[in-house]
Image (cartoon, rainbow, N blue to C red; front, side, top):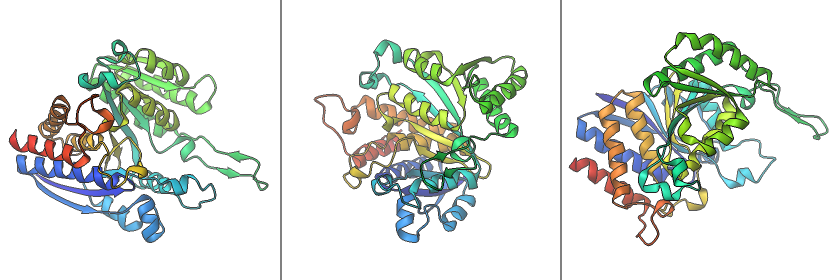
Length: 357
């Protein structure tokens, strides 16, 4: 099979973790006799420095002609600490989502037996947690208009907007994923306060009868945030709007003990993007200490979701599990007293495991 992917390393630790994920991708393609073709593109602060645009037209054209996009991370403190900056790395990410029609972010939250001790929650709470968050990506406060500030600068406003079609698309997708898992869907909103949430609930109740095998529950976002900490094993598939999903998925990442372990897939109209959920951590750039596993697992999601190559994805996940079982880990997830491994050393170990499998 021919795999044509765009590779966008981005900022900070992005190039280092993407390098590992790409090495793993190459090893899998060699193992399963696939023809891999890839091309690099620029984005984020790196692209601002080079061409003044965080998502240049050339990068967009590359993504459009690719079957999938393997993406690192964007962001840099010099923009975070400058409220007056007119162009920001994150604007490139939003532009990419909008232009590629990336309407659904899929984030699995799965605990690893060997890392339960790293979770800030009690082991009896997190053991066996395995749920999927589906976040709507192209609507809500992040894209709603009007948006801005008053002439005197003392009032700022954002507008939350959703259409029926947007809600139908994401909720239907969530039901389809629930059918493939344990057949339970939690729809998170704030329908007691927000008009957009009442539309979400109305539309969801219209769709639910089409999936009679799925148990449907509705939950206000504040309750969902508490329940995720109190009883994470109660969830199977969660679907919610853009900002709620942004917050809840980061909260969910803590359950596993490290944001460096969780991958994601952004499903799109034209192509799909696969990326770790963590940020660019620019302070660690070039030090070869970043945890590459979330990016490697994102590559596994790419094989499964973009190319329907489940055996390939399974081998990657098996290699990641084996690396942790062998205590080949970066410092953030290593057991006390054990040697920590560098980013590249973890990558080399996983590639070697795949080659020998």
